[in-house]
Image (cartoon, rainbow, N blue to C red; front, side):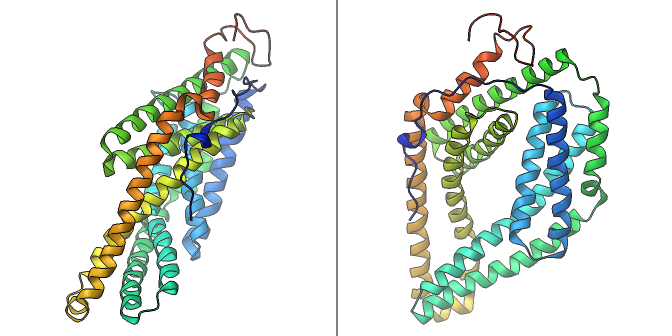
Length: 338
């Protein structure tokens, strides 16, 4: 059984001050190329193998790469940056429905093993079989979209993007650091607004938007960690706990849609009306449980936010930037106070 994160989950001592790395331009370049390389390396696995982990990993690394580009190249972005972001976004979206099917099929197989009544087992197997059919269709569609030169050419486009902005020096490093820290602050502000909206309305659209905003902020904070902010790890862990709970809610909403589609089979309904009704009631109870877990998660996150690891790290990380004017990225004296 999963434990619902509470306010205590997100409490921690104040985050340590961020000590920016030297040669931030070089480090960001390396991170960008490494992430794009991982995306490109995963494409053949997705195209040739039935590998749910590869599908998941490609979606994760596409989002991480995209968040790095957003941080590196604020608006207006150069054409190369827009082209890479579009290719990453299209790849991730094309794999979304396939990934949902992978998660649901694994969930349904676990359910089918626990059921003893023959007619109820048949109902769950019908839902699982429909999920498998949908997965095959979505797999074929995703592979057609992925089998284009746009994704394979990511490394080349990334190198072009880096060469476009070659001029690494102290001032450029400081500009990049300032822009990145600002992007973290903006992502955090958007996330807080999303939390308030989801908490106020508790609608599917609002919760889904908050789930996406949590992912974006998490990957932005992960990038800060990769650039040297060791204190970011606690904030990452807190965001992941929120993301995991919202992910379970998302899986339950997808299961409702799949089950409704499968159990609408006229022949099965005519022969097993009570079984269909019983399965739908179970799914409805689970959905109610999931939405209650989300409501409690949103409330506990809101109530504990000001004392949370997330908020403590944001204050330490983004607060320093406002007094950084003229400071060397190599760690020179700060003009002013933290």
